[in-house]
Image (cartoon, rainbow, N blue to C red; front, side, top):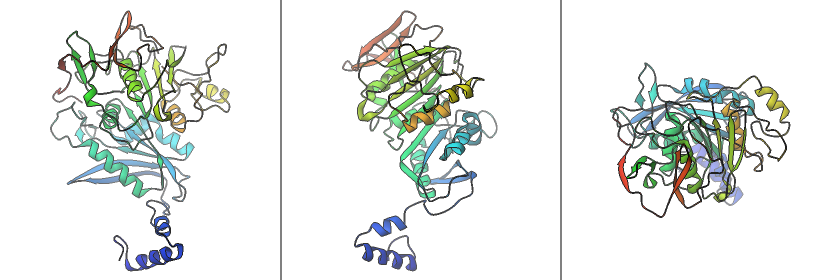
Length: 399
């Protein structure tokens, strides 16, 4: 008897095999997650990871019927938050309802500083009692979602805010390769921070070894005090957003200078000549803080004016005024980026009030790190070992 099937199901599958002369019939009949209609809206999920039972919340759009394979976006909450609160913050559920995909928001294993809130046990960072293996949990959550819903396995994406983005960064750095693209709000990391003997904070290359190139879109506010744009802050942060962005361009094998455009306090950068056809895009807001950016009054006008272009993606020309708004919902822009609507479209970045940002990111593909200073950027070469003085790890109790 076929494992996992009852007698009747096994006989039915056997007939399909003999009819098709291959196992294709059984594969279609037993396809995980497809063929079952489920109610739209929010669903609580319990996910077994070894002896632990972990939680997540999923959101199904009203268009979901369980017959057609749909994409899924994993939405990682920040510290001192929870899955439903994150969906309200990110508006991924609204975008999913409009576009017809599923959202899954997993829950971190650490208790937050406020009742009924949680945080992520980010590897090498938190060292807090009660933390579980989050990498194993994310892998288990992905597999559970594949079994539960009718998904397109090539269109699994992820988005992280603050501590959730740091967890997502750590997952990619640990070799997690299930996500076709990933988005970050005030949270992009490219390895654990180490300080060189000359006082520069850089990513530790040994702590970030992705399984393959991955498309990344990242947002950061220049006035973010929790995860400072230029670096510093808590021990686990230290190096700045530009350094993290440049390091990912090296990890993704991007070549040449990024395309850049600025307007209304926002700078857009795009690297689209990377290995495997992946892209790296960044939005930086000169007046942005640690909050999730919110759509401005012009957002709907801009989106309507974009016509056939994906919302938030701006076609570059020498004379055209940029057609983007600084506070269009990041989830909408991420979704357009994930869909790769048009690889010739430009996405985005904003000048820090304390740092002179070089939009072309002049460090070549061999550079291991970029250090921001009031005068500009300095680079170090990847083939030279880091002369490490100390690391920024192990802040006990930090989230």
